[in-house]
Image (cartoon, rainbow, N blue to C red; front, side, top):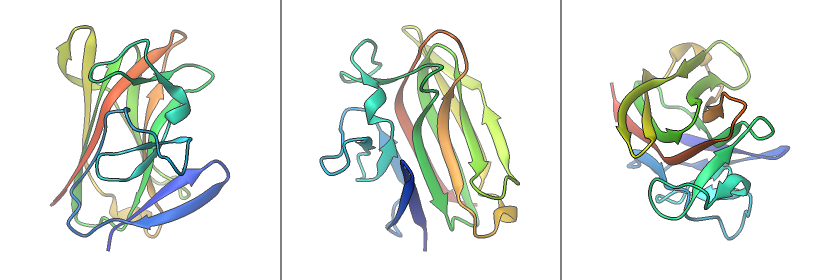
Amino acid sequence: MRVITYLILCACFTVACRPEQTSITCNTEIVSASYKEYLLSKEGDLLIGAKFRTKEESRSGDYSLKLSNENPYGYTVKLKDLKDKILNVSVWKKGKGEIIVASDKTRVFYESFRQIVAQSDGWEKLVASFAFPDNIGDDELKIYVYHTNNSPSYFDDFEINISDK
């Protein structure tokens, strides 16, 4: 069984991921009615970052995430129990930034991804592709975007696709 865990300020809660679920897609347009700090994915999952939404820039729709030195992290999601799965993560960015994938507690896995595969109207598409690490045991895998510059950066259309090895 796959489980997705979300960090809520200082507390955590866990939502069981549907067995047939193969993606998490967030275009930054919908904020959770129950948890105002969280973005709602098209599949109904919660992602950290709603308080960083802005209409200043957007790739699709009306909103994107605006990250800065004061607020460098966005679209944070934690995944667990995805052994024998391949994860493909993508996000569009305007400015400097990267996708980070890291084990949450054990610190045995950390990878940053900066590969740009497409460009459109000043936006660049970042991608990350990796197998769910076997060496993290019961730990969770945290995936998020990270701002890497003094000037603000914008992120939009975050997506995780999950498939069998």
